[in-house]
Image (cartoon, rainbow over all chains, first blue to last red; front, top):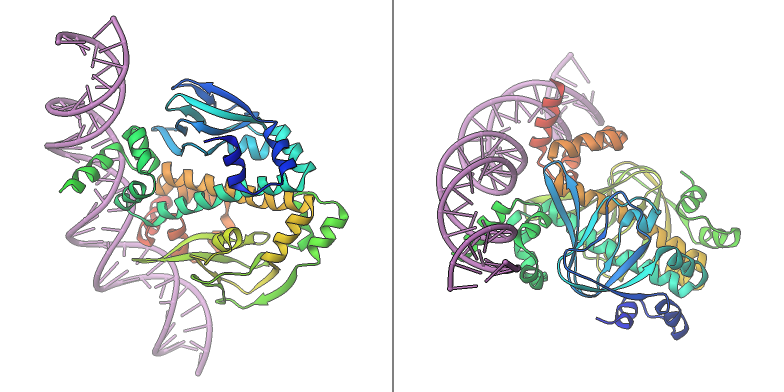
Length: 188
Length: 188
DNA sequence: TGTAATTTTTAACATTTGTAAAAAGCTAAT
DNA sequence: ATTAGCTTTTTACAAATGTTAAAAATTACA
C-alpha cells in the first residue's frame, strides 16, 4: 500500500497539498515484535502501514487487552499523544515485520494550520476512525460474543489468518476459552 | 451553555471565523419525547445542546440499545449522516425539554472547505468524539459491569439523576436487572 | 528430525449475567 | 387520597462466560 493511495484515499487533495504532505513522510522498517510505541510516553509521530500487521493493547489487572489491529493502509497512532500531546495509555506492537510511513505530529499539526486542504484531510482521518470506533462500541454493547466473532470473519477474514487467536479473543471482548468454544460450535 | 462557549471550547477561532460559523446556527426548542432524528433517514443537521438531555439508540432484536447520552454542550449528530451523508442507523430522542443550536451539514462542510480555522475546528470536533468513544470501547472490553457503573457515578453523576435507569443499564452494556443488582450490592 | 516453546483446545467447575415474572416503589392526574 | 401507569427492585431459574489446569496441536529452531 503506497503513501499516495493512503493519502488520497482519505480525502482528495490538490497536487501542491499532496506533495507538501507527502514530503514530510519518512519510510521506516521494523521487525516483528518491535514495540512502536510505549504506554506512559508521549509519542511524537503517527504512522501508516505500508506492509504488516500491528496491535494496540493496554495492561489491565488481569493481563493485556488488545483493543485495536492495524493492517495495510491503516493509521497507527496513540490517541492521547496525537490529539492532546499527552502520554499514551496503550502500547503498540508489530505482529509481523512492517514497513511504515512515519510523520511527526507537530509538523503535521502545523500543516493543518497552514493549509485548508490538509486541515480537511486531518478532519477526515479523525472522522473515519470515529465511525469505525463507534460501530465497534455498539457491537460490543448489543451483540453476543458469537455474533462479534462471525462479524469479524465476514469483515476481516484476513485478520484471523494473520493474528493469533488469543489477541483476537481479547479484541472481541471475550476470553480465549470462549473463543475456542465458539469456534468448536461452529464446526458442527 | 451558550454557543460562543461551545464553539470556542472546541478550538480557538479568530473573530471573523467565529462570527461566520456562529451566523449559521439557529436556535430551536423541542419538548421532552421529541424524536430529533430517525433511523433510516439522512439527517441534514447537527446540533449542540444548550439545555437538556438527549439519548441515541438503535433497535436490536431484543429491544433498544442506548449507546450515547448528550448533556449541555455536547454535539448531537448521526455519524453516518454527518460523515458520509448517508442514512442514520440510530434514533435520537429528547429526554427533557431541550434548547438546541442547529446547523446544516452541507453548509458546515462548505465552511470547512472555505476556511482553514473552521476546518481545524471540524477536525477537533471529530477528534474529541473519537477519544471519548475509544475510551468507552476500551472500558467495555476490559472493565466489569460493576466497574463501568462506578466509573459513571464518578464521571457523570448528573446523568444518573436525570436519566432513567433502564437507559443507563443499556448504555453500560448490561440488563436493567444487573444494574439493580449492582446498586443493591453497593449499599452493603 | 527432534525437542522445546508456544498456541489452541478441551474439561470441569465457579461466577456472572440474562430472562421472565412478580412485587414494590414512584409519579401524575383526577 | 386513589387509581393507573410507569419505573425499579427482587426472586428464581437458565444460559453465557470466566478461571484454572491439563491435553493436544502447532511452530520455531537447534
